[in-house]
Image 1 (tube, helix red, strand yellow):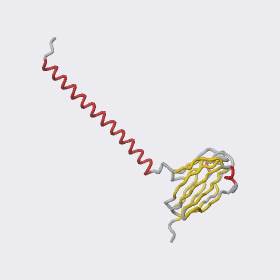
Image 2: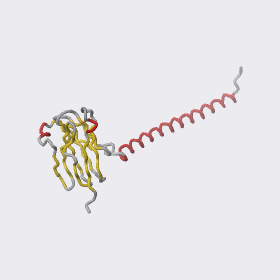
Image 3: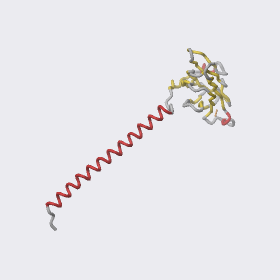
Image 4: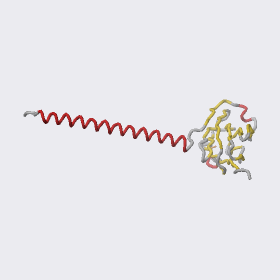
Length: 171
Ligand code: CUA
């Protein structure tokens, strides 16, 4: 068995070419995955507004001083709403606000754990007795938004609905 110089040179060239192709395809695959990841994150954050501004949770025994919750105007079109969950309703509800209102919700519970989620938005805060969870959201679309409870809280959990009515432009 004898290996000629010509066939060995051919094999070297073949391996070099194969390696070049392999590197190119690995690079292409990694680039495509990176692009897919970046694109997905971009869409999730910007198109679906998945990221909302939360101000965290704090211990707040005074949150229940107004058991029916409260609405306080804090600016030209800004409000702070103390939203109280209890078996099995939300107050204040219906909450009426103008279009474009920026609302800081201070969410708490009068009894057990509830979940404060506003359908069609990304607002989602757990309502904890003795604790206030804050989230700020701007209602740029007029319409009626359902508040749904998304923590199982007993027999009527599935019926624990509230409403936020966002008025259209003033005439
Ligand atoms: Cu309240 Cu489920």
